[in-house]
Length: 141
Image (cartoon, rainbow, N blue to C red; front, side):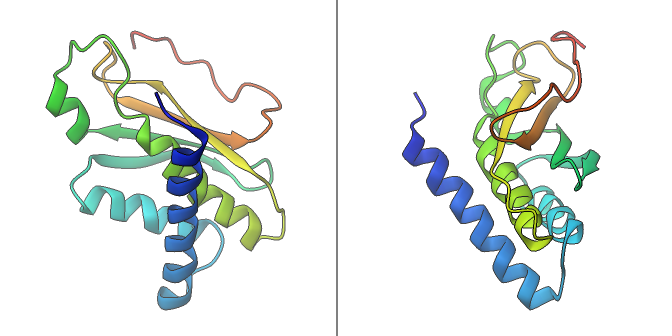
């Protein structure tokens, strides 16, 4: 079971990575988020695409195909297995929020997983505490 410490450590690491990359690459705002999503794909963890991002509302949707974690357990694991990305995606978007002077806490969640009957893995990141559902995604899409 995941703990608050695991979330804090992973989210904090992603936030710190964004800070460093923003400075080195001279990026700001959404470009930092997109840069990290691109690097997640380059690291071989899965191919990520940003399907939706709204800085004003502090929300994003990230789709992942070819997840290394799904490959390790297979498509019929019967559970979501890519949840560790929740924390890093939330840390990334939290950095963007702070960079744009919105100072929001973010929380990510895996709403569908290719190891649990879905075609791809899908993650939603939004403000914490959550205000409204971002999108409806059928579990077996």
